[in-house]
Image (cartoon, one colour):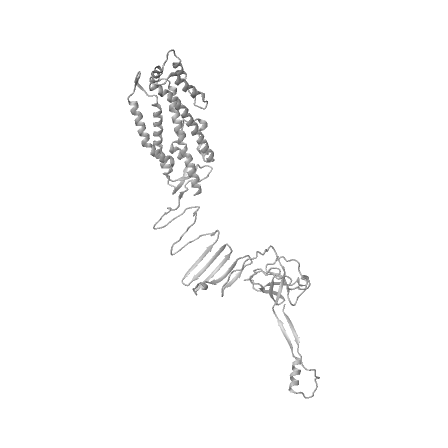
Length: 505
């Protein structure tokens, strides 16, 4: 509050009478009459309370004129900001410069003994000897995080916040250019820099995330280039995306192009993200796969060669085997290239229906596998590891059956080549039927023929040459087809790995 301090003058102790005085005595008398007065309009006060019901209003106690007064004595007198446009609101324990006007107290500016202490406090400065406060809370929910003050250069203007944030009006003169005004808005990890250096200007924004939200339109206009760079750029619109340009260049040589035409992970969708060219390649390979499969079946049927007449093998049979061998040699490279999926273009990806893919590969037409082993393609990718394990089990079973059939085939083939014996046929049949995991085989007819009186290996050969034991022929054919169908399932395991790769792109 404003107060006046008066000091009395000093002079000579002389009675005021009508006698003559000297000049020196006159000066002494005048000095005695004068007094020294000092008027103090501004005074430092300590903030003792914060009024939570009126923003910016505080209760303070003057450091000099109210030294030692209790809180109750100053409770009815409040301080308001002198200028409500630009203000940093006080905290308990701070020292501020105050004044009075028409009975109302105002605060002007905060005092600090240490300018590096952003939230400087000086509790009990106005009660050094009595009525000291013991509650050192700063007011409300405020917590002092001990922020580091902003660095400044000569001529800077600084608005320092209490929480490590600030606004600084500065320049780049310390780096050389004279005309280089700069405004920095720093909120710790979020910074905006506005710079004007001679004839060039720059606005820089740095943060973890930058969000621009407009109730109407957002326009980005530049006389030069517009450059957008990021790990992933997503453009989403409720209606349409229009690109109007003289030239459109798509360069993803160091990246991947994705075409999400169908929803992913939708409850009604079986679409997955796969290489863009997988469907046409699958359709192109459907016929060769079918030809290869039929060729294998045909080769299996030739293990028991047809005859022209009793005991006379067909001379074209050997030629048929040679033709099959040449066919497989020609197709082997193509088959390997396809089932390794090295032809997939991993630069362009799109959403592909798995049902369309399995149909294009001919996998929906597999019918030689037992029903309990068949896979449901809509469930295959729910648990890829479990599905791949099931595929491996199906292939292992098919391979085991092929091995068992191979032993049976060897015995019959030896007979037809003019060797072997009836005992070798019986042993092969017994070994096959002893394994309960092998497909069932009706051997009644061949066993009955062998059991006949005086039957030798030549008799069994003639029996087979005339088409005997058709059950064995059917088993050989179905075994080969089952093995081929099981191997086709490997492609779905590779596709599953591709889908996982697509998710990680």
